[in-house]
Length: 183
Image (tube, rainbow, N blue to C red; front, side, top):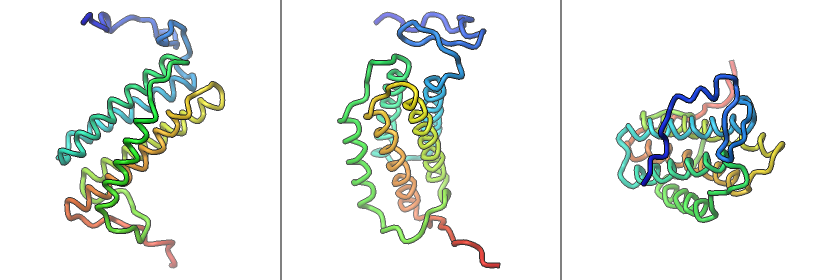
């Protein structure tokens, strides 16, 4: 296989623009680049989460998701070339059902926290929602795929369920919202 990246320092972005995979150049502040950056940040945070002790099945699932997010990044970098598929959404939905079935029903609003791995999953969930907002903002200006938008929506659901499952598996009580203060 030939090397894909032969030069890291190109100086091509020094003027505030960056190149897309189709060869076009756009401002680094463009909504497409904003969405791409948010997806990259989410993927990086998932990498950090995987440094925690994560059960093997969840570890494999999160590695698979990292690859999916790279596909989404490729889709954003190359407009008009969708890479995510319905099968990837179906896989997320199945994982949500599988992990949620192992949890007690929700009775209160859950606060981010508990075990360190669960708190990390909550950070990933919040970043996923931010990436979803950036993708939706891009979609207001340029065509995006329905699959990419739905993928991030399902992923945030899964990350919430995984955070709960990580706390449950660790025997750590989920922090819950106490309601408005009535001082």
